[in-house]
Length: 86
Image 1 (cartoon, helix red, strand yellow):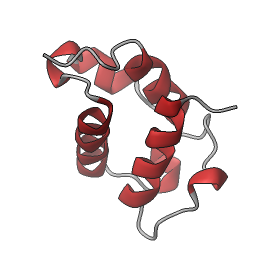
Image 2 (cartoon, helix red, strand yellow):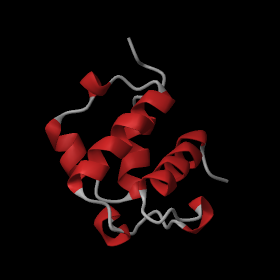
Image 3 (cartoon, one colour):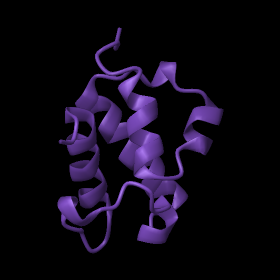
Image 4 (cartoon, one colour):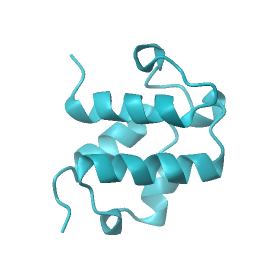
């Protein structure tokens, strides 16, 4: 069963894709770029996702963002920080 973080991440990624994808069809281990996500779209996706999860962007380093290549990476990283917004 998907975590709340995974569900919200799937919904946000779906909305960021053009055309939008069914959130349930998004595979966790596919590279975000393989879904057509550009670097700008990735930043917008992560910003919106952090807002929805109450994750303060200050917790994320440049390296964290660079290593978020798949939705699985995103979920793992943000799960550690969910609810810590200051």
